[in-house]
Length: 623
Image (cartoon, rainbow, N blue to C red; front, side):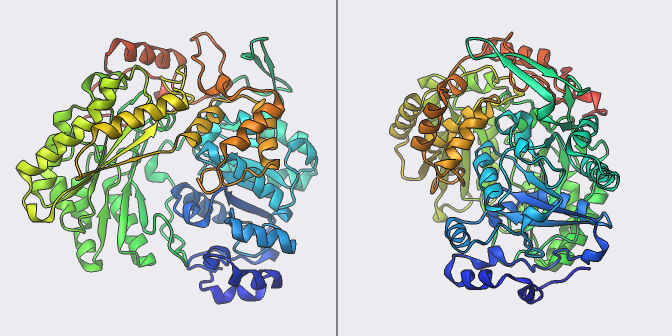
């Protein structure tokens, strides 16, 4: 049964919640009752899942994976999946003051009473928020302190490709895509409840489901120098855990009846997923490796889903989403198919991930029919030498030609994304970023169809974080002082008022590198940081580097050991037992090619033998 409108929720609310809401920012975050939210009869439900996103409502409700899996679980007749997000600080303070435990939006019931507490985690800096949500729910943080089968605490998402820093807190991790995996796990859990299994018996059986990792079934030992010596499975657990993928995107679940939030969110629009994976092979990009192989959804099915979602939701904007949207082969034809819908519904199409080397005139003409919101390109590096080292397979002329087309077509705003601290980067490469921006400015002067509007060029830089399962996983992150020096160098070189420079603060990215490359010993650091107040550390409002450094000192560990140390090819990585399909030999080869300045062709030009086609044939034909 589906109910819409907040009125249906008020009778269910805890009276304490009614007193709190007038005193907090954005109370609509906390009341549920949205159009298309799923309500079920508890008498027909035998398994309740609290689907938790360790960030605010606005961020979590913008997450496509969470929306998909919410629909998948609620399609199971006897399962009720409800949503839960991390409250902002004012709401948390009120909840703690009045003793109100963390609750699910659909029913207002405390999530500590649910069968399964499932976290969706795409970012390592959300780990502290996970612990804080468990604490707010009055659920013991450590798995060993939850001896019963209920509540079972699980986690999935990209951050689980190295979940060792939270291994002591979760009962199991889901690796890969969950549309088929989650229902299998829930069915096993239902069987465990029916047959009276204890938690250990359930975990020993769950570890044999493809893509399920049970950390407690693996012993980790260390060398005297702090590096990992061995990762040893026990009690029949597999030596390596292979991620789960959906092999046929035309059969993958799509949620046409998407929840329409009652308050504004970050991505307040319909999101249509065109394909998964990426053909490009940028050596720094974790998503480009772990989401392989490339699998596309058919154009006709995409168009049908788009029409259904727009008709049901009433949205007037749709994002055509993938890691590199302009690599979807029938993209122009899909835009043509959607043109009648766009005209009738006054619908704008948004393409957030465009490649500068295939931004065609045909595509620009389709986008011109909607609102011109500006274009975004990611050259990543300021010189061709460094772009070749990171395997961007993009020339400056590719970028400038795309900008010329855009400016000639009436666009007057371009955002350019770069990284600082990439392996082999020099001051010349940093200065090259300013040169690229100047050349884009010149392209506007020579090509703009309407110079009266002026031009806005925004250069944004982030700090390179070496991530697991990439060709740069062995690389150190540059120090905070060196990153800030390079930021200052670039600021000095950008000297035109038409170019705005934004850069990412350094301390957060430092801790991201520490945690993403961490081992199981970081569990005690996370717990210490939580005790000191760490929670929404993905937000500058709450992040404190001093708090983290105190936690490391208290635990006798050095954060620089994880972030700033070069790792040898023979070193056993904390995530060595996690199999994403891309072989270690391939990653090592790509790492060596980076230092040789040799590029690797994209997957449609030539298969490079990464190993990901072990799951299914990669959708890389040249049609």
